[in-house]
Amino acid sequence: VTPPPTNNSYLDYKDNTVLRVIIFVNYINDNPPQFTKEVFTGGVTTDADFGSEFMRVRAVDADFGRNAEIQYYMIGQTQMTLSEGMENIQQPPFLVDANTGVVSLNFDPQKGMKGYFDFKVVANDTGGLSDTARVFIYLLREDQRV
Image 1: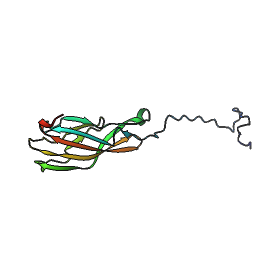
Image 2: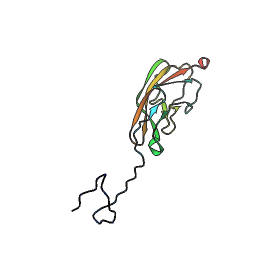
Image 3: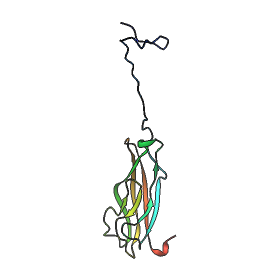
Image 4: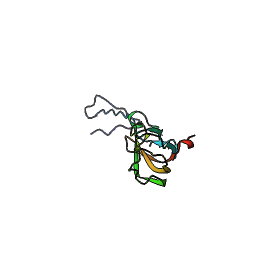
């Protein structure tokens, strides 16, 4: 039996007891996605329509290729701070597009509604790494629009 080669020894590739193995490492998913902000703030007016897209949450991933692909999800319940007319809003009042992070209305705002919403979103990459951010959305009257 021949001892295995060391860094200083000669490796004879014609020797039948030696198995040549080549390993290619494509890339390891070692970076989690990171939201561009810890807190996203947006506003929607009471004259907006059901399904309106009005803001976007965004995360970036320092990995490459498939390892940098991000999916967005809402987590937990949406907290509502109600002033007027918001008692019958369905859960969730907003939807987050899994691929783009675009936030859209899942209810039809009515004149006279006042208040704000608070929920969390998570950004997951294909390797299971993630980050979380908080979202505040204010319901504004048309005359409060900036």
